[in-house]
Image 1 (cartoon, helix red, strand yellow):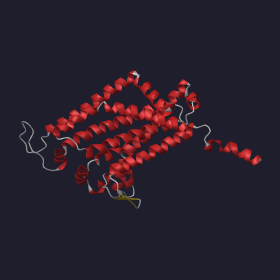
Image 2 (tube, helix red, strand yellow; image 1 turned 120 degrees about the horizontal axis):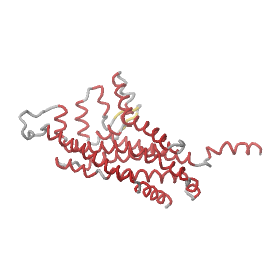
Image 3 (tube, rainbow, N blue to C red; image 1 turned 90 degrees about the vertical axis):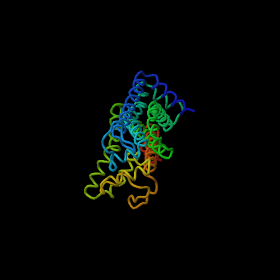
Length: 314
């Protein structure tokens, strides 16, 4: 019940801020605009079995254009999902990093600990509040996904994994912001540290793998691709993954590994997206636990040095 109270308080604080409605509007306009551009790209290129209106050229039968033609609905769905993932990487760390510092700046953090809640429960409640707020923010852009249904729609087997990747990413990004806010005195600095890790996951992992693959060390650094949420989105549809891999050079096909791959000598039998979601879930749990340890002034790891002299005198 106390965690629910913290969750309710966090939502009330964020939903009452005038900037929240600006974020809602900006996200809807940006995501809708990108999806409209994606739809226009599909229609303008004349991909598909029927040439585009007023088109006099032949349609492409191979390459990227043919791939988009075969997966028009999934293409538009992934464009929207990538927009949501990008928005979560910008908003979630900032929202979560202000959760603890907001209490400290208001002078209510000690009262929150004295309320009977454990530090881990405080951290968990703050994380729930930040996650639910970000998911509500992302939910305002869900209607733009209707564009994919103009071309046949997306099955639950394809949409479900993509949405799970987005949700797991929101939780991890918020956990990073929360963790850094527990020991960094500035919410801005905590958000910047969280952004550094987020950018490493989203951009650094793919870049490092491509560099390693160029010198034939792709198998050694293959685990990095499981940490990238954008690559996990592309693997939400197994048939799309296979077709995308067929277009990549041989040295770069490890960016989208199959359901059964060797990683450090261990067989990973899960799909790419499922492995990423599992890793993000474990990392989020670890970060919440560490946040509780940092927030707890009487944690055994902190009081061990105080108890040692007393036991020695006995």
